[in-house]
Image (cartoon, rainbow, N blue to C red; front, side):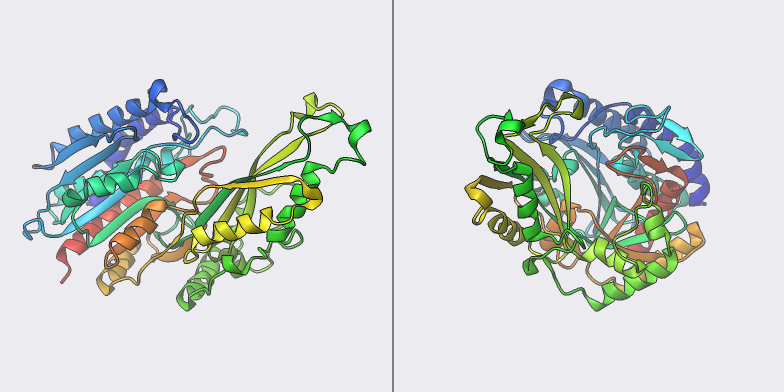
Length: 471
């Protein structure tokens, strides 16, 4: 049974390796500009490479290459020959990444981003669930098929190293390796979430993102607030007014029509079904402070807000001292980092321009206002599932979780999916993951639910076997 084989492999081999991986502060280049000098990236790549090379000995004909394009993060490229007698004409592409988000504050006592702790089947630490486990899940699925004597198509595994920075290096690698990759008929992405840990969850859509820094400058230097207040407008107050041009502060609804799309009927129905499965867990999983309540009274609407509607978050600020160091000074400028999640089918590049135009036009008091925007990244809406794949997912989830597969969009972004969706319009996609309630990717107390990871690996093995046997 794949379950028994995978239990042994995960407990005896994969979990110890992931434990060592968590200890390495391999932050993505956006959060560690000196990543080359620090060497953490190379250390993780060497760790993953060593583990994979040893396991690939059990899959004859397999190859592994660490590809390094000039001035770019490395990429692990693995090829495993198929055993389904199609002469390698069919290909499955499996994807993951090994770079990490920064530390963040607020980790529970006894844990930390680089201090792996196993508790109640959950491995705490940065990067285990997002997304260090992916390569191990992909290879363990193939190893399980070998153990069972089951068939699979040629498999290509791509593990990148700058996903948390927006995957800006990945298109160059995909172009560079395009002949070796071929045209996959199935893509498996293991970098997504799950609504609960009770069944397999298929991600049906991903939001895009529009990001940038809004800077409002009113002075060339700070001035005593007793002298300046009442004469000089507060840069924060101006920034607050500008934000009201794009967001209703009472409801959180975005005011720009260009940032909305028509939600497809099938996604509306899937949101209703997910709400029926999850109930209040859709919002109770959040670590609300005090008596804070969710933004919508209806669970289905919460899911749609999170997956198909634009939402704004302020993720950082500059220009302000820590409170203990804050004197009575009217500050010269305010810089706010804006993160606007855009709907899956919205053109994020156009949305970014609309936001920039709205923020910079006719600044109050004639203040200096600039929205320095990054290029928007559009989201992704999955193509319809082929009948064989839908049935395969249903069987796999029932076999390994004891419950049927469930479907829901995710509110985050995986740039790789949008890129592949355009490159391979006829390809089938299985986008799934282990980031369920309280797993808190990007935040404190991130954990990998190991039992779920094992079951996801088993499900992927079944899907690969069904893919090889489809007609």
